[in-house]
Image (cartoon, rainbow over all chains, first blue to last red; front, top):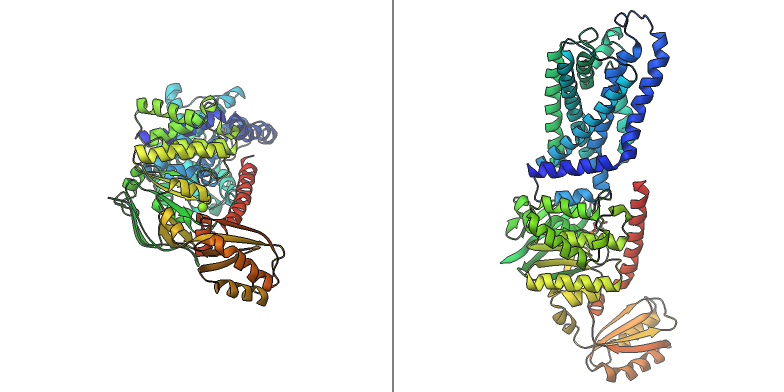
Length: 256
Length: 339
Ligand SMILES: Nc1ncnc2c1ncn2[C@@H]1O[C@H](COP(=O)(O)OP(=O)(O)O)[C@@H](O)[C@H]1O
Ligand SMILES: [Mg+2]
């Protein structure tokens, strides 16, 4: 347990110290929220796709929060590649620490930073005029929001660890960005209701784990009016996926 | 007890055999050295013994534990100072030490006194709160050595620990690791390019070349094994190594009485012979008769360098230069990746 804490603590120190990283990883979601929200906002005004009276910024806010968490958590997991490149991984690997503790520490560290980023993004969204309120009530809504932030973070930091255990060098990094992260984001229903998609694309969105994360956030932030699935489905699928991803990450890391 | 024991230890990378059936026994408390040129397989051997790499075949025990089946117990018994940088640049020196102490479960109070002592020894006390990325290469190295010693390992691996350090710091580190070995009985396995380092520190030395141990003994025995003094003849204009002229000269030199071996490396001919001083005039005559000009002559007792040349046919110093370039390259890469 104390080993998990040690590894987690390092992630925290590094996070607090890397101020530029905090800002850069928030810049993209902010730009999306501001530009896309306003530009497409006019187009989507009174669109039958959105619930009555809801503007587009309001609609995509949960998706953009999900995006901030997705980027931060995948990057945290993948940072194992950097640890390997700069030699620090060796220091951890020769220490009398189980591989599982290393993975758990790294995963929880990455999840914590991703949740902090998500919460900052959530506050910024409120600042942009996004309103908060669901059937869950204020307290319940916040608890569920944070719960989903945790599950999204844990899922994707674990995926990042799994990728880093397989990818030898930093070159693979850009590939992952374009072929995994972006499609996953666009397919998640963060920017539009899944129902507008043709059947085969819709099937893809159903196997995209981020879909359930965004949907859960959507439920917690704006209630069932925009959510695609019942809350228990989002929670069940995402929990199962996060456990699967963590086991996969731990397995691949141990074997590498 | 044997601190380290290897049986036919082998590591292959695709077709290249980096470590080739190494048999080795190091006793508890020994200060053991690996001496070999760049690419000999020293780091690969240490990587296997410290559980970073899995052997392709063969087996090894460290502190009585199997390096494949009992990795956790091996890890608890060892400390490693890696050849390549292995600190976190975004942490301070102190934070790197604290991280290490936590992983190795060093008690809090021991940690405080030990850190203080080690930082003073490595002259890093006033920089301990600075980020590692502001450290010079030598300072990093010193911090890594301090870190490797922090948890009192039973066996300490030191992979080229003083490479690139100034002579003064090297001396300091030698004294400290020597004391650690003698007073605290820590078993040491050190790799180095520096003859004087191996000579000063090691009880026993293995000369390793192309993944194989070609000689293994105490420094004194290795030097005595040369069987006499070394005469070094530096040539003014060396003929090509395989020319008839030089071949004949070599044969003539070998036929002088008491000459044990003749070797040619670049522009120097080395003769090993007992009572070397009486052999200088006839040797010069032989070379003059073969029309080879000699620029200078020297006579000395054998050094490990001579032992090395005898077993590998190469000079170590060339390798040191090669390694410096390697270091510079590695550091450049390091810097490029960072920002
Ligand atoms: N990960 C690796 N993949 C392929 N070849 C390697 C790897 N590590 C080392 N080698 C090769 O194995 C040989 C021994 O390397 P090394 O153990 O680093 O030598 P030394 O430490 O004695 O300089 C070298 O030829 C090196 O190029
Ligand atoms: Mg080496």
